[in-house]
Image (tube, rainbow, N blue to C red; front, side):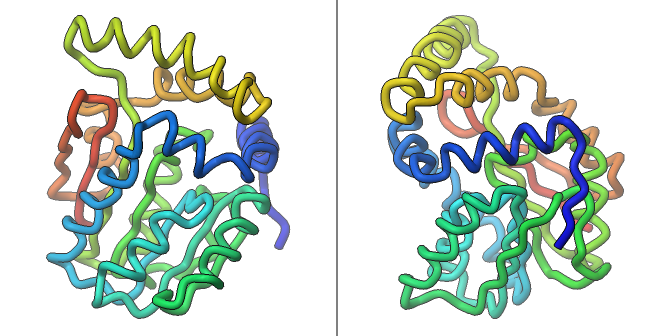
Length: 237
């Protein structure tokens, strides 16, 4: 499939292709394993909707896909979409090894120009990925388009803490230590310098919920994870 890319999307795809082999271990290291607990919040939210068809956008190496397969009994089909073919190759191998996996289709696409039909899925998830969209509002509009009426949206995204001391500690960790860890463990300082910059540039909390409403969603809410370094945004189509 031919993928339409702007400058940022091209950069993001190349970056994630480079770090795909280190992505999971770096996530666990940088978050102290909290990223798995954050994803569990997505599962708990979607359980009330009992979705059958789910689209996982910016699916990366498949963490959310595997959790949906294993812990959400209603799910019968999952579509995973990501720009990076390197990340999707890792996801495909993980899905293949997972005995509990439901049917999964993986597609290398721009999440702002999805090939999925309108009103074709019951739930959309996007975990730690929307900050990489060059146009988050257009991405949200695509999410709304593919959701059936009343379908569930769950977006998990990193954020900057609000509280003073936590914010100071976060700034030291995110802007100084993470690039150093990225160089040491993944041999890619630039990719892990991009991470805190992308968080700062992304609308957060009230600004993000306003953006979700602009895309056409209702029942928009957000929930901060411990320490305020991640936020779960939920809504209905």
